[in-house]
Amino acid sequence: MTGVDETTPFVVHIGNGRINNTSTDDKNGSSARSTSFRKKFSVEGLRESAGSISKSFSEDLSRIGFLGSTAIGVNSLIGPAMLYLPDTYQRSGLIPTTAVIIFVCILSALCCLHMSNTISKVHNNKHFSLDVGYSECFQQFWGPKSYFYTQVLFFCCVTCLNVSSIVDTAQVVDTFFGHWVPHGSSAVNFQWIDNKVDVRWINWDYSVCSEELLISGECVPFFDSEGGILLTIGYVVTVLVFLPMALMDLKENAIMQVGCFVTLLVTSMGFIFLFLAQGINLDNVSLWGDEWGSLFGVVLFNFALVIAIPAALLYIVIGILGAITMPNVSQNMLEGLMSGSFGTAMQLCASIFAFVIIGLGCPLFSILVRMNLSGSGFLSMRTSNGLAVYLPFLTSWIFYQGDAVTNILSWGGIIFTSLIAFILPLLLSLHSLETGNDEGSVNVYKPWRVIPITSQRTALRILLAFASVSIIIGILGNLPFITSIMN
Image 1 (tube, rainbow, N blue to C red):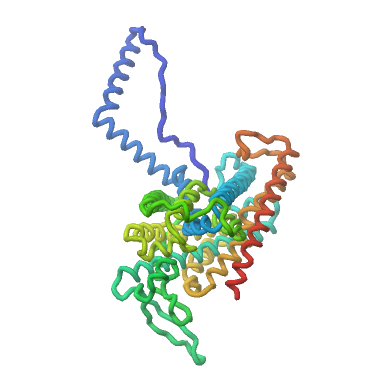
Image 2 (spheres, rainbow, N blue to C red):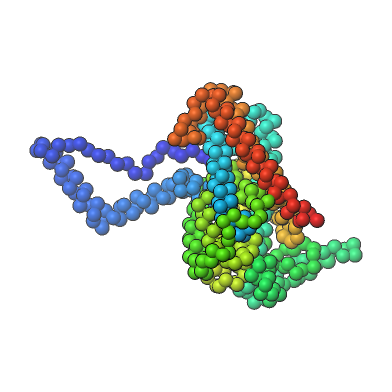
């Protein structure tokens, strides 16, 4: 991320002239202030104010700025996983699920703040004026080997997320075609039969799904195909739309991320109103639930990443409302909503949410990986684009069908996210305390300030212990689910 420049769009100057002074300068000043006051409330003044706001907005986007940074941060994190929460609330209860979300929010926020503080300790980067990637920070404090290893881990972590997002977006497009386009969506099916490749053109639409499958969210595109590998129309559309965005830099992409952020807010409000329209039934969810094994894993590994801080309030609102208004909600509520079983308005809202929110996450993931790979000249821009952009966009289609994507998300997400998001940032922060006395420019525990080095070490070790225990609980809770998938 680039540092914010020192250009200030709005400058407010307050004078302290005395009213009773009748000098020429004061009269001129009074006349100028009177003219300025009248101008401010005239049509011309309003036009100038609107122009200033527009210019400020444009400048903010051109250099990422606060708005772009907020959009990128939120969009990096919030996605289809948010719609797994209603099912989680129904299984694990209101109190345990909300408590875990808040705990993970605090844990992830502290990890992010510690990482930011460590980045500010890089030479000449106290005010974040340098482009310092994730792995570059490790190189500064832990040497060249850590730079290489974290490059590999960061690439694997974000690429796992990117591949699953590309496939999810393709399925969203195919779902839309299957419901709204005559003859549904289409795909090329590749199968290995009798030592040769059999290529067939197949179609899919909602007519093959029963009402029970639609409501349960288990009616997904091409679920009834006879195996093999699929290259679908939805996947082709996804690549054509989002691959060019992945070749942009972060500043260019920030404009689209702001649009995505606005869409997120609008569709989330739409979900809230539509959920309320379904009618509240408190019998759909209990206070404590009856199944907590996978609770920690679902929240920890789906809603925490070092590049963003969880939007806990939005998670809680969507999760609770979905749980109390929809009986027996499907595990992935998005698929059930997109089927049309809950009305056209809900279907359109879910489709827009899925395509924009999930889809725009794909180029963002690619850009983040490319920035990390090309930082400090580790790889050329051409090679970085090949690994970060072309590799996931041109190969993810082979994971469209079957359990391959689920396995990637389960194992890759748990292992790599645990290291990248929690363990490594805290270990690096601990190590940075041994390499210098610079406090950094981020007050992690604001409004309190932990100054003594021994106190900082103690706080970091306690936080590392909480993170490690949380990860172990999350992994143990997900083992039965992963084992069932593998079998």
